[in-house]
Image (tube, rainbow over all chains, first blue to last red):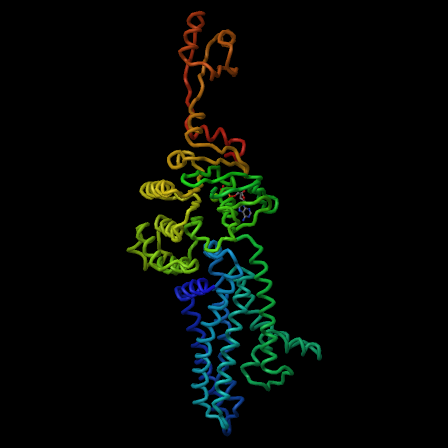
Length: 247
Length: 296
Ligand SMILES: Nc1ncnc2c1ncn2[C@@H]1O[C@H](COP(=O)(O)OP(=O)(O)O)[C@@H](O)[C@H]1O
Ligand SMILES: [Mg+2]
């Protein structure tokens, strides 16, 4: 397995799309965080509330989630596009090992980059908003939460890329499931509609960043767990098909 | 040990039968040509050998085991399927390094194979900018990484210039001379005649011939004698052998001299007495003509 991890790390670091998508993720996190924090600060009458300040700092996650998901998609769909997947399967005929190797390397890389980007966004945003009652623990928890959330979005992309095998198709699926549908299902009527909306992909997943509140019945970790379940189901379907399909 | 053994190997894609009940062995120490017209099922067979496509029926073993059971497959089998199937954004070195690492091969092997295929100078260049010839060399470098006993090449000379063709031919002969099993596909008989020791000929997914190249050449270049005469029926009666055609007689059992002597003695005039030697290509066309998917 260590051989596969080494190999996947070489593949990940040696293409430009990795650098670009990770850079875009960091820029959006820090840029939007600073921008929205400035807006919040300017429109506030008195000191900015801590929850609002944190939320403003991490507001870039909405878009950053898409760029990291794009990287997740490309990690596998890029191989299907070029036909390089055959070389990979020849080298590692146990396809699930290959997929696991990709997931592990992606997860570690993404966790590091996204948590750092979130920390940068929090540092910039909080320096602007200067909220009252700030504790270091709260900042660290938010940064880690954002790193986890964004990495989960990337893994969602990886699972969808494996399932769809086609870059544009997988990107559309990722955008729909991460951004569009979660907003749409919020319009569902009634108690049943609200339950569906709360448990829908990123609606549940992003609770881990906000640190509670937001009017959801799910706790941050429960919400993140629900999101991981979505990703796991997609990944299992993708893995089963990957094993079975001709390359 | 037999390097590759296919037993009743079959593959269907929906209604298309790509490979049908194919059985053959590939032995070490020689170049085995895998010959067949376009669409005969050569690439499909190779993908099944490498565990990429799942057979619809039958089985194929590599060194006695299914491919996916090989622990470090690249140390046993090296293959070049499609030279252009690489991520264009990667350097040649990184491309090979990722493949080497996946099978626990040291980075020094990458440098060695780059040297072998003559890509050392361009190792840092993105492979997207490689010519087909360079891409082909890169693909061969990847196949050689694990120093494998078994090598598969799918139409390796397609689109190459004469230099490249000669280089690949020589390489394949050398690899076989080192005792490795080399399995190489082509749709051109002339190509195989110059490279292969043994031939497996398929058409429409079915086995047509499994024979030594020398044998194949001997049999097909034997040819026949064509006899034309205004009194063809008399000639046929006289020599007592041959195949009657409307305007000529086709004889395989007698030489031109024998036929000429007999007809001269009998005073029968001849219009033509020719030993027809079909080219290797023609022999191959004859063999596969029933299995051509489309006739142009
Ligand atoms: N993935 C596929 N899906 C559907 N049909 C295929 C596929 N691969 C090959 N075929 C069909 O199987 C037959 C054999 O193709 P192939 O193995 O590529 O032949 P060759 O390599 O000898 O030219 C052809 O009729 C081809 O159209
Ligand atoms: Mg082919």
